[in-house]
Length: 460
Image 1: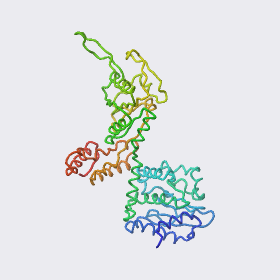
Image 2: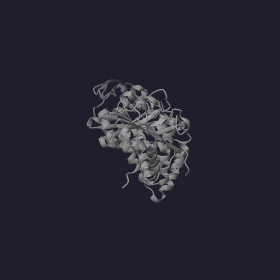
Image 3: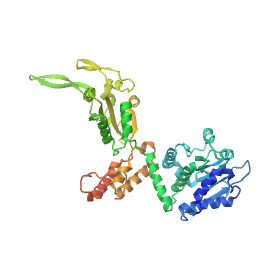
Image 4: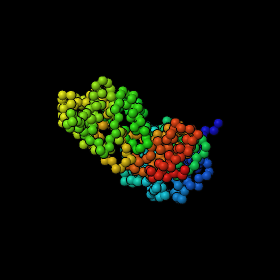
């Protein structure tokens, strides 16, 4: 049985300068052409050209790879390319910019999505893939600490070290998956359609890349963090299930109290204040415990979680007052003096069994940011849209719209704007308890309303 062309390529990369095809440009070009046709067919073949200059001279910088059509067959070129640099005891596979500049690929290099997907692949491959911080930066080179772990390609790094922006060392078959993904992303970003088998593999890989860009932390891990840190905030765009997750986590740990912050919430509501009442027809005032003191009292009899929904909708400095001093997980014996006496004392200390779990909407730009003092005291966990619930409902249009939304935000948005991505709840049946046969219609109405409200356009 004939060895697949891609496996032959991986074997050649592992051999490096010891590959039997070194010095034979025609053989290298034929191998790369076979790899392309094996995975992508002939449809987009005229969009690329293969170059192979596998000189065996000691001081040469041999290479072979795919570059964009429209360049000369030799000499400097422009645009991005997938290139293989053979070295001693292996090779380095790279994405590199031609020395004549960005060319028609400037839009790919400048797009946040290209950087995000490569960074996601680096995480998925446990750091085997090196990715440059700024793809448009032509002044910095691959760091020496990175090249020190590569097979010896000194002449290539001297010549192209400033234009290499993603790279993996290939010394054995363990690097096969990284090479496959690096090559797959190169052709995907250039709009090249894949053949059946590769199409299925790349679709699965895209799901994994998307999951790495929008990671989900298991609720069990959040609960463990809450037990350890005591004060945690789940932050993310609306529709990602932050509130429901907070309630489930609180229930898994013990009892809970749920409150919601808003602009009218005060220190007197949350910590302690005076409330008017009538006694014998006379107006008087009594000390009233706020949410924090009520939850703290309940924590005396066991583990208790105070869930604060929309924690940043309140004026936190005013609402917490001096109590912010107590939110220090490493100093459980801290006390503050309250303005009013409660249970015969002015002192307040948080019970060791009390935990606080907040939720924060990152998409509402009208809400003030949480200040540094509070950020230091709370552990913050990002909560992103989750594909699994949309898949589970089985509506093809909803899933297509959801994937398209995540891809659009991934491609076009900077890190701040990425926090505005709509959550999965916008793509789910708003009334799942009703007639299942009408689910599709309900989801379409839900998506239509969300697209108007969030200014995201869909065809429904």
